[in-house]
Length: 372
Ligand SMILES: CC1=C(CCC(=O)O)c2cc3nc(cc4[nH]c(cc5[nH]c(cc1n2)c(C)c5CCC(=O)O)c(CCC(=O)O)c4C)C(CCC(=O)O)=C3C
Ligand SMILES: [Fe+2]
Image (tube, rainbow, N blue to C red; front, side, top):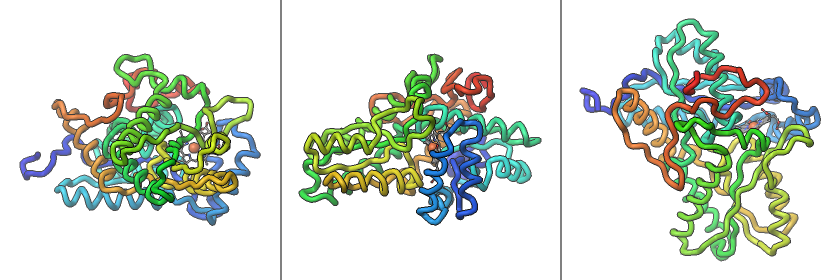
């Protein structure tokens, strides 16, 4: 508490919400895809295909609106809690671009900001790439504020509790309350090499291979809580969506569609799809799951329901606030509680040395690491 009796956010004077970004209209789609895949060696056919996913939804991703909605809820929450902290929004791949936002924060006199990224897990794609972009933005902004990226939150109760309730709601939408349903947890596939090198060998970092380990911990915890609530032991699996890259490069498998085939041949008739790797219903969720995987399930005669993502659930909003307060306390030299559920402890505030390396450009600097 500060002298006014409000939660103490010192040393921070702003919060930056950092996200992926997405196109807002059809003309944005191609330049957005170029931003995302620059230098990444993604085959042209894959890009054309992903472009079609966006055009199917009018050339607009819902991700920016979802982030603006989260920020609006956070602003209300901060006001209710007496927290006086402006919130800024910056994206890696689309407007508002991170660099422009950082320039605005600098002009507004922000000196030190906490950074909440809308990506909960460790890997180059889901963490270090964000940190590289933070480095670049700070490099090109004279007098930029100091930025502290908040810890990974895949095992924070504020992220997982909404997912548990979403699973229970999805089960209730199935005939016979989904008593025979398989819980299919889905996340973004990444190249197996990226998965194996996620995390670091630094004892103060996240142990390797962090990406799959963290997802398993989250999925197991949600499944255990669903079991406690229903009194039924649903079997559960962790599978992948949105595979990209060259066909010759191995990526994490099984793909959700192949897995549904497998389940159908085993006689599974009910499935709950749980997008455990994502925090809002963006394109991977509304296309890869709601459109493609749902069509696969229907063709196979499987009754499938998709569980909601954390989105703007009040517990998720409160989690962001708690992560800011936790980190602020730690930066003031206190030892705050670090809530974490499941088999893994709360992650470190600062990424381990050599964490989640960039395979194509190992020397590329990144902010907010022990080796930064
Ligand atoms: C781990 C992970 C997350 C989760 C963590 C996080 O949230 O960050 C994520 C999220 C997202 N990915 C998104 C979109 C895209 N990702 C692509 C490509 C890729 N993603 C990768 C990984 C991830 N991606 C990888 C290894 C590639 C291959 C290229 C490379 O090696 O870098 C491509 C290019 C086309 C293609 O290759 O499929 C697009 C368009 C959107 C926006 C959605 C919207 O618009 O609503 C979001 C939230
Ligand atoms: Fe992606």
